[in-house]
Length: 245
Image (cartoon, rainbow, N blue to C red; front, top):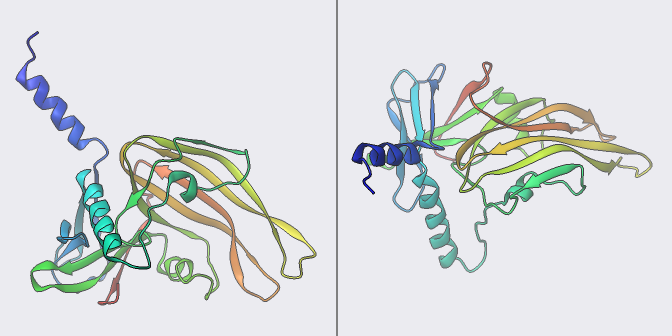
């Protein structure tokens, strides 16, 4: 049987582009100079650029995930204590009841950066510049990743997750929680609409409603987590300068 070389080439190209993600935008009031978007693999990998006006382009190739995993494995082999462990789908979008249907939940998830943020620096100079988050607001990012030290506000951030095979999580998970005096209960709600394709996926993690506990602290009450095909129109490109990433 004869196979046309152009057919083989087109199959190869489609396979390599499947699941690839391209991200672009402009950081408002950026003044940290030309830089690169980096992933701290064993040999730091450039996945994008930022120009002096704040315009950025990022490409997440499928082989990036294997680079990140290989680096984690080498770091774990050196460690006598703390070990890096990727979440599986059923762990990242957990529900302890049958109200949520999970398919292929044993798939491991690979991500880039930390908490949805990308690292920015100048590789040639070994110079950290800052980090870039895609989110609804800086206030949301500051409270969400402060682990309860600050009052939470509604909002969202975008994360990019890689899986090698399709997986999904669908349904509304209600987790019964107690008030501080243990006299009343309320439902913590996670609404999952996760449809992960093989390759890189855009995932929106959103807090839609908060509540105030008996100590006066504002905490998340309702979440929506869903996969997206394109960035929300109201997304902000939030740059935080500094070398403490």
